[in-house]
Amino acid sequence: MPPRKPPRWVQWTVVPLLILVPIGYVIISAEQSRDSGEEKQQQAAATTLTHLWPTKVQRRIYEVTIPSGSAPVAYLETNNWASSSFYVQFRTNQGGLDTFLAQYGKSRSALADGDVTVSRKQARTVRWNFGADGRWAGLKLKQHGDKPDHNITVDFSNTDHPVVYVVSTINFR
Image (cartoon, rainbow, N blue to C red):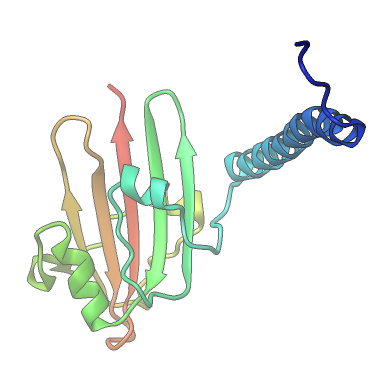
């Protein structure tokens, strides 16, 4: 007995679907890929702080955890052949500062009063001004291997809501 032919309506439904679904998938994927590239290009071309939360991947790579409830948050990532630096600035509360320092195994007592640990060159990169009008305290964390080093400076001008400045640097040498 010869195989039975499917009804004509099945052929007119299945054949177009077999063609249109993959074409639709390719169009949607191409559009998403194109949008992603433009966004990454804009981020790479940034020369000033971006006033948004950094991505989870950036925070994980540079080992910078921003306490929840911190606002405003701004960041900038710079890269060259020798190193990559991640600049983060955020305002938090006393508990948020303690949580932030605890991630490095430190407490507020580890901050040296009057010490600005962010270098002048780093500060110029993101236009941070560590003038005499702030109550500064700082901490430098050097890590071994491929882990990032951290320069942390805190402005206690507003003691209830200190501003934290972090430069996390990964050296490739």
